[in-house]
Length: 299
Image 1 (tube, helix red, strand yellow):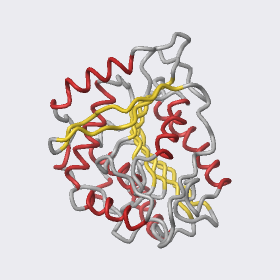
Image 2 (tube, one colour):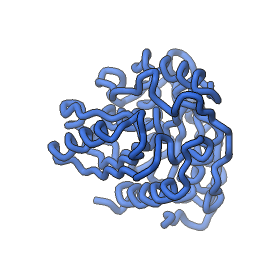
Image 3 (cartoon, helix red, strand yellow):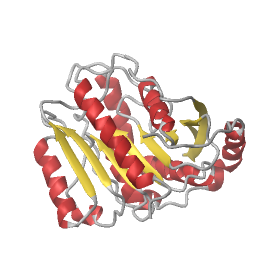
């Protein structure tokens, strides 16, 4: 069920945010940043099966109600402004919960922006971040190159996400914040929970790299939703079960779902492994999870 945001259009928020971000990009992050251990990231061989391509097929479902979307600078990393896709419901009046959206190894492309729009239409302020410096890929070789660059420079990605969190807190005025990512971004969604173990309010991992390292997982307070495919060779079921077992031992708030007979990237309509039935089931689960844990009425 989408969140009600009121009846008066908030027509000037994007302009205000543009000015505030440009003025404040050099303020730095108040998060824990690169000093925290990063979540294990995919190896150079992780991701869609060899030979697969990102077809560029648009996301099938449009937002359920009008949204306002802007390309905005939300961070300054390594002396470069970082631009993301910022989107919120057009009828927004009061502050709404925020969601940090983290792209697949393909980068911040049209499919990710469309998914960010869909999430925002449900009653959220959404920032789709860019960990690839404005680049995106269509082939696995290009995607792997972009991904490896991040894996080899994790402090820059940590700072990027830390400033994204502060952007939603300060400029977006989000009272609660979750992180959601697919594939490469799923691993970084988990890493976001490690960067903000006391402050993040929800984590959604779509077939991302996970860990059973209890020392890394123990500080996390956010509820975790993990969505995986039974036939995924990149994130095989035994790794998911080890992650689940560690969460159980640590008495974490978690839901792990393994969809039968689906492969890696089953929720990406632009990819060869797309499974519409599993994707829609997972989407419904995600919306329920976010509503349950990000609602401003939650104690």
